[in-house]
Length: 274
Image (cartoon, rainbow, N blue to C red; front, side, top):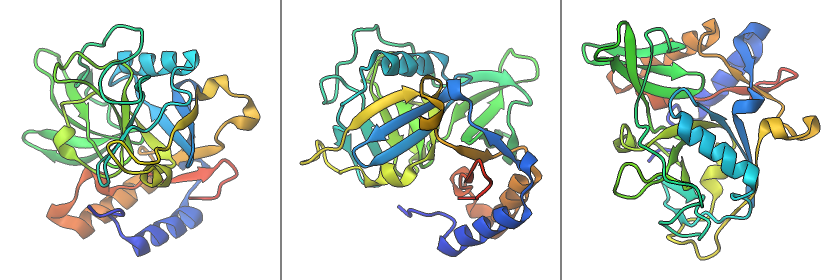
């Protein structure tokens, strides 16, 4: 699978555009209460969580982080071009925490205007972005002017692991190294990596890896001292700059355009685009 769907030179061009054309209103800060900071043996991963899609999964990830359950756990199943899986206290597939399993949260019903930007639209529904998260939606049955939505498994998207029974998510979590849309609508999406996708892709591969990497320390951003918090902002999907770049990509890719083609753009709070 291609690592960079828009290409190296397109990425450079986007960075230059962000640096020269963006205004402060184009950027938004991370919500400390909905951001997970994971210090791994390969570097830091920052995940923006989305309780509007999977509230129970997000609550569980926060709880286990605050209990220290995730600290020191191995990435026990890592497949190149697919996923980094971790979060099992036994450091292998199956099992879970001392807390009960979670019900399936594969879809959510949201207001019709929930998407910050619409990327694709057709008779069967639409695709777009809620914050940095790519989602697919369709009219919700029995909900007036509502959308039934689910997360699209693009690079960096965070999901809940489970067994064959849909209601067996517990503590295992995984991060997409690359896109795998076959997971859409079948595993709860609870967030997306907004910084550290390079770290996700650097985690040692194997089932299990011969020399596994680990999550050294996992914390909700709100629980960190100010000096330890990620100092980044994200290009807002509702901004004219985001929409202009989205339109450019759609024009360039034509029928081949995918929700996963739109990169996440961040900058330091001082204003340097990355």
